[in-house]
Image (cartoon, rainbow, N blue to C red):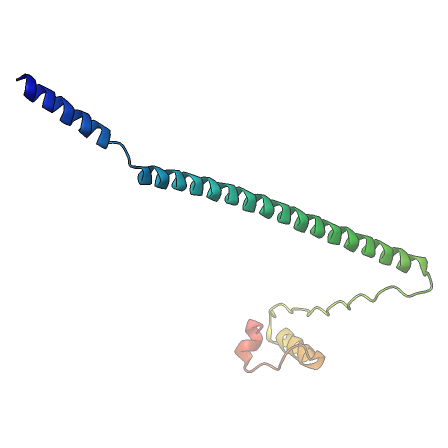
Length: 135
């Protein structure tokens, strides 16, 4: 029994020593860890570069806005400095059509239609029903 117990102990010691990871497995795990760290560092650097680029774009946009305001102010000052120069023309107001209300009787309807046809604001009526309805 002593011999079998001793042989089992020796075999168990060999089994325990062989259960750990091999040198290749340890090296692969270390390489994977280093690759992960490198990927995180690269992502952080890219993020910082993106923020710096966005800041420079924001500064350029602000400079363009300030330049635009300054140009508008100088143009307004130059226009105000020349009193003899006529002001910019405003677009002419649209002529509003006078809408005639439906006539109360036949005589008023015919007068309104004749007036509209003469002014050119309305085509001649097609029938007397249209005249009475005010179309």
